Each structure stands twice: as C-alpha cells, then as structure tokens.
Image (cartoon, rainbow, N blue to C red; front, side):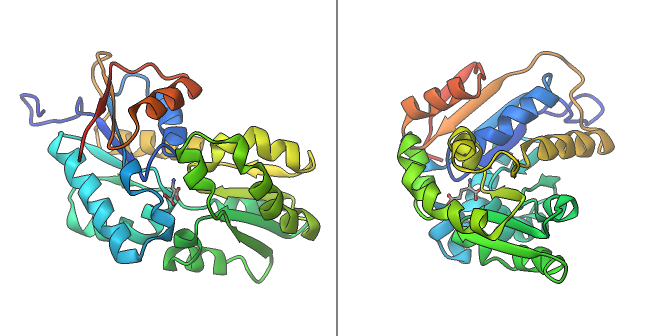
Length: 267
Ligand code: DGL
C-alpha cells in the first residue's frame, strides 16, 4: 500500500466493533472523510463483548486489529466503548499504528450539565473498566452520575429487533429521569440506533450525548497530523461480518451508506 515515498496515506481506515453498533461511528467518519477508503469489521459472531471478561475482550480486539492490519489499514478506529475501555492501552503497546477509541462522553455532559446530574447508559464491561472509573471519578465530586447497564440491548439490536428494546429502555431510563438528569450519555456505539425510541421515552429537555461526530473529527485530526490523509478521491467502502450478512445490509441502509463490497468473512 506504500507509494514511491513510502507513504501509505491512501490505505484504508480500519474500523471494528463487536457487531453492527460501530456503524454509527462509521457513518460519521464517512461524512467527515468522504475521500477515505474504509474497511469495517462487524465481529457479530462474538457479540456482546460487554458481558465478556477483560482478557476475552483484549483477545478479540487483538484478533480484529491484526486482521485489519493484514488488510493494510493505516489507522484503527475501535468503534466500541467496551473494547476501547478494556483493550486500547494493550493495542497501543502492541501495534505501531495510530488508534482512535471511544469512551462514554462523561466530560462534555459534566461540563454542560445544569442540574449536576447526568445519566450514563453503557455495557457492564464499560462501566466496570478502569478507564471509565478513572474518567468518571474526576467528575464525581461536583456531579451525580447515574450509571445504568443496558442489559440485553446489544443482543436485540444485533437481531435487528429495535422496537423490542422499548420495555427495557423504559426500565433503564426511568431512574435517570426520576433523578433529574439533564444529559444522557450513550456509552455504547449500538445505542445511537435507539435514539428515536429513547426520545419518545424521555422529556424533551434532556440532551442525548452520542460521540460519533467527535470520534470522526478526532480521526480526521490524527490522520492530518500524521500526514496520513488520503491523496486521492478514489476510494472503496468494504464491510465484513462473521454473522448475518442480511442484517449488515439492512443496517447499512439505515445509515444510508452505499458500499462497494459487503462480504461474509470468518476473521
Ligand atoms: N458497541 C459496543 C460498545 O460500544 C457494544 C458492546 C457489546 O458488544 O456488548 O460497547
């Protein structure tokens, strides 16, 4: 993939998630960086990561990264809060490429909160991670953080059963609303697909914080500062899944992304 000057700036951006959730990030990356080639890995055969041990999350993150690097990616976007909060430090030590991660946006919510109360909806793996505990502890003195584990939400989303999440969301959001939060942080990249349902269930003055745009901007900044921005407008968008290809296709329609290649791969 390197050109005559040894530059691999036209290589693809590699993105992975435990499944289809990271497409919410991929969508924003494609918007901000339309000239870039992208390879997306949906590790749906191993979803949900949020209920696995830290060791298993690290192993799966290494497997996904190794595969994307084998395909020649120049940067890896870990489009999964659970994988980022448990594994990104290991990945950064192990591989010599830039990594972009995503973790619950506690800081922007904390800085904007007027009530001094915010909600965080995330997986068990994220809420129990050292990275989340360290970040959130910085704000706990001035702020009440109501954390709720989104049990089974990822499972239903991975089956395409979005409407079926409603009774669970009623249960998970109620304690946040009752406490008077003014921001709800979506700490899992699958959850932005639930925003229309969440909006029906919470008062209109509560802001939903989703970090997709911030991650895309950060990807642009890092590519720029590393001299890795694509130098050509020729690009490809490739999506791999190791589970249900029809579901991947239906999610790509949801995010309005046209892809040149959608393939089943046992990575
Ligand atoms: N999209 C992943 C995240 O952001 C879902 C985790 C899971 O598979 O449980 O955390």
